[in-house]
Image (cartoon, rainbow, N blue to C red; front, side, top):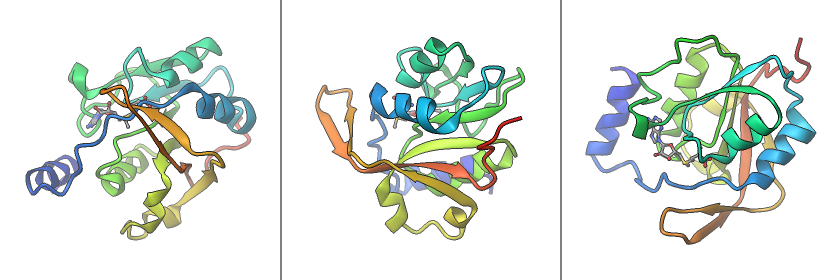
Length: 169
Ligand SMILES: C[S@@+](CC[C@H](N)C(=O)[O-])C[C@H]1O[C@@H](n2cnc3c(N)ncnc32)[C@H](O)[C@@H]1O
């Protein structure tokens, strides 16, 4: 069974929470880009869970990066779609459901990824998945916007693959 099928079955069984619409504010993205990742401007960044309204898209463009954004509402389902163009890394805040298969899908590309997740990921059943990752814990809670206009605040971490290129070539 592939990841997409597993994800769909979890949805049918009602195991997925459908609370996936949390929009990231600019502060943690600015902090990550300016103080941690040091991504060369030549790198092409794929944001697979992002429309043009996303702060990931805005902040990356503002810094002069070439980006590719895609989102399920534009028919680009992460479990089926990969950009035709060249790309160098994944950066986004993904849906919070299906974390393990989502990280496995990221790993399958064999390229760097950096994902924003709620810190509850560390208390969930993730098998060995997190053993293959590195983390940056974010000290302040992130206040996410939701479609209904209310704000949800929780503790988060950036999750990167082990071997993330801290010193890019
Ligand atoms: C936690 S939200 C974050 C949105 C945006 N990345 C941000 O940080 O503001 C995750 C988004 O991924 C979308 N999504 C859910 N499943 C997806 C899939 N299979 N492929 C692409 N996007 C998906 C959701 O609709 C939601 O808008």
